[in-house]
Every structure is written in C-alpha cells, then in structure tokens.
Length: 540
DNA sequence: GAACAGATATG
DNA sequence: CATATC
DNA sequence: GTTC
Ligand SMILES: O=c1ccn([C@H]2C[C@H](O)[C@@H](COP(=O)(O)OP(=O)(O)OP(=O)(O)O)O2)c(=O)[nH]1
Ligand SMILES: [Mg+2]
Image (cartoon, rainbow, N blue to C red):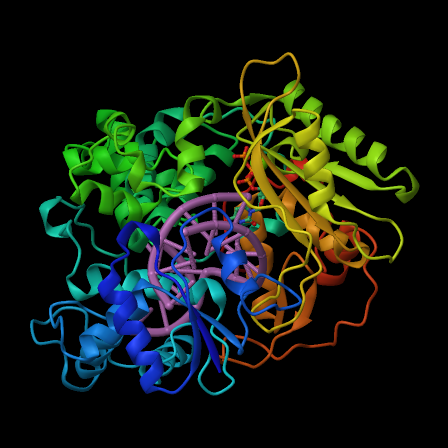
C-alpha cells in the first residue's frame, strides 16, 4: 500500500514528519512524504501517485493527517499527554463494561449504528467500516464530534453546569399527535410567504439556536430549538398561552417551560444567560468567517484571538478558504435581494449557454430563491444536460466566469477531472463554490454551482432546493422505509440496522424524470418549492 | 438510551 | 483523517 | 432537546 502524507500547515512540525517517516518505514510501506499547505493541496498530494482521478481517497492512496501522526506519537510513548481517538475509545469501552468512574456518561447498551461505530473505532478504523458495515455518514461525523471531542467525556471547555437550565418534569401522559404532524415534507401549506405571527417567541428562542450553533457537539440541542422556531413560524395563530402548544411534536417539557416564561416575561432567562459568556461571544464572532467552524474558532480563541478584528492581524493562522472568507466577510454577510439573486443565476446561465451552445442545457437557480424567498444568503445554481451524455467539465464554465470578471475568488479548486467517492467510484457530479459580483454591482456574493448527469437531476434539484429540514425529513422517511435517498437518487439500504427500520418494501426500478416522480414514488403529495420551507424532521 | 440525512471539498 | 459546508 |  502506498501512503501519501501531509501535515496541515497550521500545526506542522518537522518532528511529526520525521516520526511518520520512521513509522512508515517500519511498516515497510512505500511512501511519498510531502508537506504542502496551499490551495489544492489534496489535488497535489494525490497527483503524486499519477492517479486517473486526482482527488479522493481509495485503498491505494491514504491521506494521513496530523491526528494520525499524533496517534503514532502517543503510541510510541513520546507524548502521553496527547489524547488520541483510540485512547478515548478505550475509556468509552471501559465505561461500557464497568460504568463510568464518576457516574457520568454511562454506555449501557449500544444500538446498531452506535455499536458499529464503536467497533469501527476499536478496530483501528476511523472512517471506513471494519466488517462491511457502513456507518451513516452524518451519524459518523456527529459521533466523532460528540463522543471523541464533546462534553460526553468531560473534555469540553464549557461545562454545562455553569449555565442554569430549566427544570421541568416530563409529563407522564404519552402525547398523541394529529395526522397533520407527520413528516414535514408531507405537510401542505406555504410558509414562504406567510407572515410570522409569533415573532415575540421566535425572537426569544433565536439566541439559543445561535448559542448551540457555536459548538460541534451541541448539534441536536441546536436542531431541537430550531425546530421550535420553525414550528412557531409556521403557526397560523398568535400564541398567547403555552398550553396552546402542549400537544405539538417538538415541544417537550423544557421548551414548554421556556415558552411559558417568554409569554409571561418577554424573554427566556437561559437565552440571556448563555450569552453572558465572553468566550461564547468570541466564538460566535470568529465563526462569521466562511471556513471557520466550532473547532477552529475554539482553537483561535485558545491562542488569544477573540474577534474577527483581532483575526485580521493574524492571517498567517488561516488557510486559503478562510482567508477568502475573511477578505469578503462584510460583503458575504449581507442578504441578497431576490432580484439580484435572479440576475446572478441568469448571468451563470447565459455564460453556460454561450460556452456550450450545442448542449441545450437545463439551468435552475435553487436554494431559498427557488423556494420563493424575498432574499437569499447565497446563490445556488444547478446545471444538467438534457441528454444522457456526460457532463462537460464544470471547470470550463468557471474559467469562463473568471474571464468575464464575474468570479472574484474560488473557495474550491475547479478541477478538470471527476472526484472519486468513498466507495472508490468516480462520482458523476461536479461542484463549485466561490465568490462572485455582477458587473456594475458593489457587493460580492457567495455562489454555488453544481453540475449533475441528467438521470440524477430530479434528486439533485430536490436536494438543492431544500430547505435543509425538508431534505432531512424526506430522507428520514425514506430511511425508515428501508431506502437511502440522496442528491443522486434513491436506493435500497445496504443493510437493516434496527427493528424500527423496515426492509425496503419494493425495489427502486422506476425511471425518475421530475421532482414530482420522486414525490409520487414515495407516496407524498407534490409540494411546490414555496411549500418546502418547513421545520420538522420527525415521523408519523 | 438510540436516533435525529447524506454527501463533498479542503489541507 | 478532521473539519466545514451544502 | 425531543421522541419512541
Ligand atoms: O445541511 C444542508 C444544507 C443545505 N442543503 C441543501 C438544501 C438547501 O436549500 C440547499 C442550498 O443550501 P444553502 O445553504 O444555500 O441554503 P438555502 O436554503 O439556499 O438558504 P440561504 O438563503 O441561506 O442560501 O442545499 C442540505 O440538504 N443540507
Ligand atoms: Mg442558498
């Protein structure tokens, strides 16, 4: 096996490189060491092996990062203080056997996904499956965030005990839900153009969403509060008493108490308390930059950088994506008026048609624009060719948009070859992210362009139109019926992973032409894009 | 107490 | 691989 | 944080 390794520029040390080299030689593997930190470094590293498809991981080329090197280092006993993923897992497994030493975070039994993940970690694998079992990608990433680096093992800097929480008793009675509270993607009604009658409540909850957004291991609390806001926004009446919401899915004891408090006092104590932390304010500020998430922000904060203003004095700590995010921060943060979003989409479309006059392209501006919103955070454009022929290189279109001085900066490196996915297959979609500005306009905007083969287009369009909750809802439904749905299509799930999940009741043998075909196949009434601004991801 | 969607780009 | 993002 |  060949192993390419590089170390991320921010933390690279010669020591780690030397150790890795020694380690690789001991294992008698071919290796090509490189130490690059520049846009497109993944491309460069993989190219060392002259692979047909230059990007992506497969069994011949493994990209090894700082985390792996630290793991090697600690295994050799050089720096026992460095916690590694496997050491965490030893602790976790021990807790599963013996119970947690200090009574926190016991693992008593593991479900299928969780167990598979544990076994994967213990087998030394950290991303691919051990025995053919595949861990759902999202679940894998959230487990990594929550268990390996989260509060679960008491490793976090922000102990939850510092912040007062609402005490509330769960009601003993099992809730019964009306039929209208089924899957979000099943529901009808338009929220896009509907006024928010409960601003007094959504405003009170928003700080909680913002707060939990700044931690990777608080995903589910954030999602739960977000669902509450979206639910409140979708109501056709103004809430005057918490009791009106008692029976709604997603309103549990804690949220119920908060709504009650907000109606009585005008605010939620907890929403105010959490933002009294200077650290939280700093983390949130740093995460305004595209490419800076929870972990990097915390890292910067540990180095004493407390704000974007201070970050501007330490650009050497940022990678190329984050540098662009910082450079265009003030522009990107501004909402895009609907008319301009349409104009940007049209500019991309016109350029594509001029570039490929023979292709009779389908071009659609998706995202919040297609859902009818009056303003957008970015512009999402999707393209396809109507015939079965392969996609022309998206890089050519991006090059043309550069030539027309429309694109100002790249957040991804346009490539002339298709990526290889996790299963080692050549992907058929191409995706680009960058910064653009219309001629004559002042403000730069975030632009996403995607190119799909025709047979994936209905699913791609569905995905790219969203919103994200809508997608998660529909995919959750498909999953529980024994399928797996993505932006590329719907397939029978690889294996049944719990009794709650059905065996696929029928094979996927339909030809999907339009979005409506997908709704029909799933048995959902078709929903116009403007009806897809929804909140719930639960099930009936 | 498990699950809460599935995928890609970067370094 | 870990992280950020769609 | 909520659901099952
Ligand atoms: O986690 C995510 C994020 C996005 N999407 C899909 C749905 C979304 O509508 C589309 C475009 O993403 P974007 O972030 O642009 O969201 P948006 O709905 O267009 O809202 P905004 O106005 O903020 O751009 O990609 C997902 O499926 N999952
Ligand atoms: Mg968008």
